[in-house]
Image (cartoon, rainbow, N blue to C red; front, side):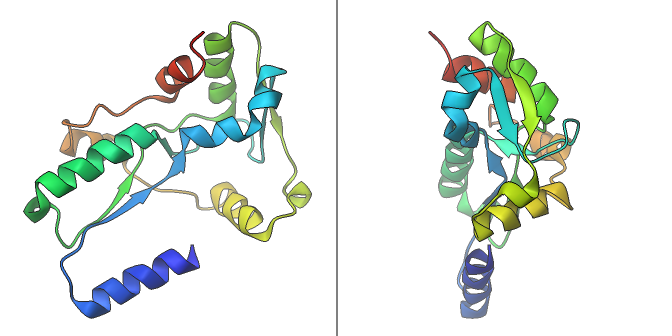
Length: 159
């Protein structure tokens, strides 16, 4: 996170035309726990009803293509991107539907996270988290399909 801020600062100081895209948490991050999901458990260090703003990588790619095709409309902006904000309980329900069997959310204690970078991320997500106005973003950019977590899960776990 610090390195990203340094890069953005350097770009601003260089006074070069730029557009910065700030993706939120990716849906695909759930696949890091694929074996556990297949066992019926979604391990996340979040309370069950805390929304987690997320994005499909495909939506990031579509948005980046839009910026490249119409740079003048976006130059000088920092645009945070999110497609959906399901809770861990909602994510587990969507995964259950996609897999055809129950998946339950299990809240991993923060103190069980050994990697300092991961711990910092999960503290952020448990605290202020991302604050994208998802409805406004989607209204401003109807050219993007904006994938929902449930739709991503269905495609990710299609048989």
